[in-house]
Image 1 (spheres, rainbow, N blue to C red):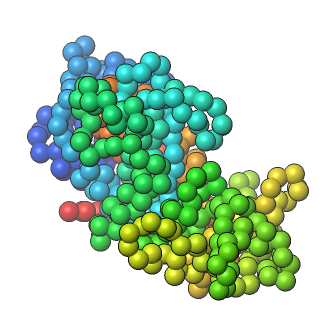
Image 2 (tube, helix red, strand yellow; image 1 turned 30 degrees about the vertical axis):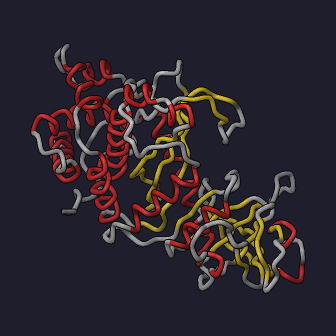
Amino acid sequence: MATECGEAYLQTFLDEIFTPLHRAEQRRWARAYLRGLLRSTGKKTLRRIARTESLPPTAAQGLHQFINASPWAWEPVRRRLALGIAANTTPYAWTVAELVIPKRGEHSVGVHRQIDTATGCTVNGQRAVGLFLAADTRCFPVAWSLVLDDGWAQDRRRRSRARIPEEETARSVRAYVLDHAAAVVEQPRLPGLPWVLDLTRCQDANGVLSGLARHRLHTVCEVAPTQTVLVGRAVTPTRVGELMEVRRSRQPRVIACQTTDGPARAVPVYAYAGTIRLPRRRGAGRPDTSSRTTYHVLKCPSPDRHRPARYWITSLIDRSVEEVMALVRGQAAARTALVALRERFGVLDFEGRSFPGWHHHMTMASAAYAFQYLWADPGSGHTAAPTRPPFEAVS
């Protein structure tokens, strides 16, 4: 009975999220692919998905056609996924995380030699920028961008073979983050929430902060101690690490922080006594309203003195330190989500070489993640009696 109930909820989920797929055949393959991602173990190959679902031998080709060649648009599906998650959870922040997907060879779309910012190692692979909605105790992927380097941007033969749209060019990670922000702003039904970002390794943190300010979005961003800011009427930038070393300029707080093993512990946090601004960006060609946005600076010293202190810049100047630091958990939740996406939902396992195929696969993996953690048994790879109602209508 539980299995029958779970299957009914899976069908409801598919009906709601994949309504933009107008052809019955597409919806049928979407169901098979989603069930395969949820139920198969190990690498999520097309053959393994077909075998898990007890499909005929020719089904692998049908799944390949659905992912790599079928011309369905992934953006409407992702919008419905985001709206459905927001309607059935308590979201508190948007966040962005990078994912490096190791690959052999050079033919997979977007693959290039790059530095993995998480490890500092050079890898051959794809780089993805994912948009996540932090809600309750989890973070849900709702959109993806594939980062292209100059080689893919300029080689027309490779672009044609991978079916890369003309508007997709080589851009910085900052540009992809701001594209995600713009897409959220353009959808009034999506929740207007603060953006919680880790900019400690970003080469243009000022550019990200300024871009979000232009969209009138509030931010809580972790930054490196070398991040420059303007204090008072000063025109010479100051590093946040140096700013927060001046004792008279900071105010101590102690907040309760929930640990992974259960009990809360007291954590000291220092708040800058005044407000700061960002240095004005040059050459923008338009008035830089972001330079007029004011921010607070927060510092969390290392508890054991063996690790460096951490710093955050936030535009939520009317919120308490406790409220601001509570939002920071969104970044940890995004990192946890990436682990699950890699280990259980196959984001590393796309076998095709086309740009649309990659986006189709990432969309299906995101949908599988949402269904698993909102409606299926959290301790199982199989759908079961749902733990909450199905998606409310999002049309």
